[in-house]
Amino acid sequence: MTETEQIDKYILDHIAPEGDYLYRLYRATNIHTVHGRMASGHLQGRLLKMLVQMVQPRNVLEVGTFSGYSAICIAEGLPDDGKLYTFEINDEMEDFTRPWIEGSAVADKIDFRIGDANVEAPKLGITFDMVFVDGDKRTYLETYETVLKMLRHGGYILADNTLWDGHVTDSAYDHDHQTQGIRKFNDFVAHDDRVENVILPLREKNKVRFLKSHRQNRPTAKPLYALRFLFSTIDSTVMSLLKSVKNVNITA
Image (cartoon, rainbow, N blue to C red; front, side, top):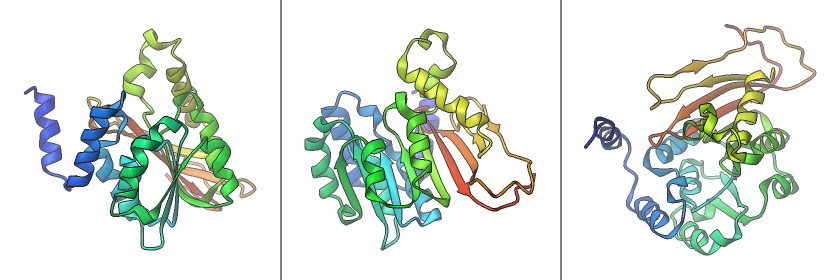
């Protein structure tokens, strides 16, 4: 076992347990789907649950259900009156994913739909407290703008895979459309004056980036989107967290 593998095991041994149902789902995802590692997994799943418990959102949107692992984790953290609306654009995943969601202990909190969230979610007419973006990397910027319009002031956006296994800095992937999409999203958010952002990769050799706006008394004519965290999970994926606020003073 390598040093990295030892650290990974140590982390998983010292956080909240995954639980048998999610363990079986993660295993089935890796056995029966082509890209099993796309599932959130133990560490990211517990993190999602904790963030939801901290924020206590009533309405959550997920863009990209895949096998349903992250959806179940999010739903586990929801308050009694909370609801998760999760969209999967790949209709071939439905036969695998729906039974796992419906068989979970939190099935009543999950509304699983097949379709393009960028098109279908606005039709719901719901103002969301939190959004988890983990869909097509090529359209991350489009999704970002779409979900901001549906997000309440003071709400949160989490965007997964924003380092894309390190491809964002690797010239070998310059012509890869998904890498291009992630780079475009990251560049836009980094220079979006609505956003205060932090990059915090947990497992990327101590590379930590914090970006915080020092502007005070901002004009209130437009919403401010403050607080963006980006952090990698155990498999070197990265997630960004954005908090939407309005009519506030932001100090250093």
